[in-house]
Image 1 (cartoon, rainbow, N blue to C red):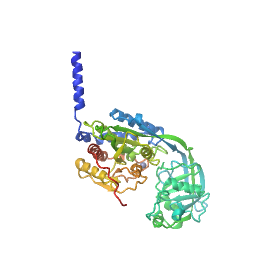
Image 2 (cartoon, rainbow, N blue to C red):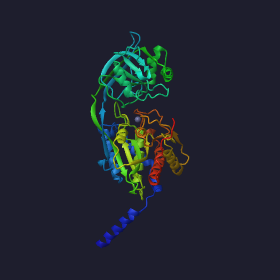
Image 3 (cartoon, rainbow, N blue to C red):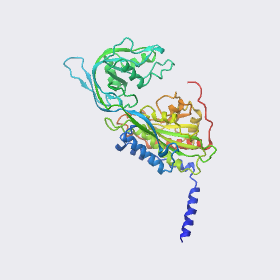
Length: 485
Ligand SMILES: [Zn+2]
């Protein structure tokens, strides 16, 4: 009797191992319901808005690692336990006050509101400054390019205000067009406060500067501050884009007081799992699927980051779980990376590119999912640079979601999504976005699960699984980037 049971068990195990689980079934198992349930989990308060380096992020990373383990996916030998560590500097704000001071003596200061008028940069320094706002355009000082937005202005002890961008003149301004460069230049000129005019949203992407209070301000507040000069931000942006300078004392006065936590060293992590290729001859070749797991934390309230990027992480987890069961497995490997530190400056993807696990030899391509939870179509940043990847995605779309729009865009490896560092390292890489990402919730407490269209995640997830498995099985020439801008 016992011998019979053992024999039965043996037979059924063999039968199970040989049971085909083809791509068609795997694609069908990437579901709207599965992705939605994961978004609900990742946006819960227990993960504290998933700011890299915080306990909430650690808990989210461990949770994802547990799900990958349960799905039967392996960790890479170089990344045991699924977590690839990298260092970062963590700041943090405890409280802030901002007031618009009146022109007349008898009027009262107008106190300004978080997310409506302003929000301190999440890496702001501490300080309490009351002073005139001096508008300094792009905030660039680049003698070798013949530009100084601070020329002839005294900003010591004052509050400078800048906008994003650099002259659209075809020259390379990358070194200057970043939050890090703009804030450092404000400090170098002795500014006592720093404002960045665009939208009053959470921004953890920058370098803490001790004793310099820094804030994002809304377009409307920016316009209010320029009103004395009879200008709007739209007016000055036109001048600036043409290479002109628009720097002037505004006459407006504000108070900005921020109490920040001292910057401290912290640890981030990418969560990395591996579906080894079934053909030893080509198993060192791999397709990488990515999504950033992190968001902006929970100050001054929970920032759930449902679309940005619980949607991409949930979809990637759904893809990984289905891919893990593929029988037979694709001939080449598929690597799944949940990046940390995206919101803090693409730290996780930069680290992965710089410290690639040695088991991974040749990357056929990277497909990164970012904000895939809204809209009816998809946009592929870098699709025009890497036509072979774009074609693989479009062919998968034709098989799985015929009729879904998949637009290709050009990418300069810009520091706006996790495909950028790969592209800069000459690895074919794209980021796929849902077409509905321009909702008002971006980097605010409003980016909740209520914005999420589960079917958007399902459609993009099915297409990406098909594209990746097909690439991993059939292989594809690693196409060089197409020339020209
Ligand atoms: Zn974001």
